Length: 223
Picture (cartoon, rainbow, N blue to C red):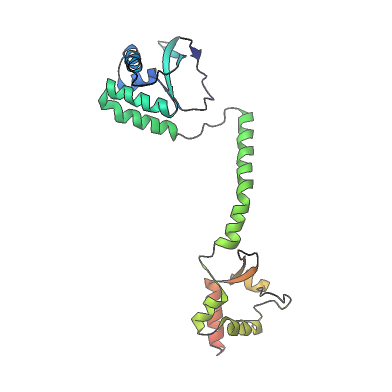
């Protein structure tokens, strides 16, 4: 069977070798390999591919021929091997696979990799920007109220309340087809201009703006 040298970095799949399994279950590597062969011969598991890895021991580097389990099939087969070999370590290998699959992304090792990572992150932010903008303009209204909701607090209609707010210089008279807060009202934190799902501007009162409007209209004797 042909064996290849495993690359140290860049493997796109999470993998586990028979040597790692032997260390995990505290068994000799040749015993683990024999168990794998036996289970594969019986058709219990798929025979995993072999590779050669480098191992350091006693300040010496030597090559070891190992089986390599990859992908979902490899994951299930490796668990089967451990369950047959050392049942008490079954939970340990499941935990190990979980750690491999949920490990943090590898940090960039070179300047080129760092630049690529920065470019990828910038691209992700660029793609997410329209969604963030939409959420800010349309969706995030948990603390905002429209004129009807504020008017209900005063026991009047939104039309009646808005006429009174017109006299208090809350709305701009330059916009004829829609109500738009004057800049002073927005700067004071009393209101925000949001966008409806149909693309129309809609003035929304903040809780601070609601309190201001109620207090102002009550003090003026209008409500």
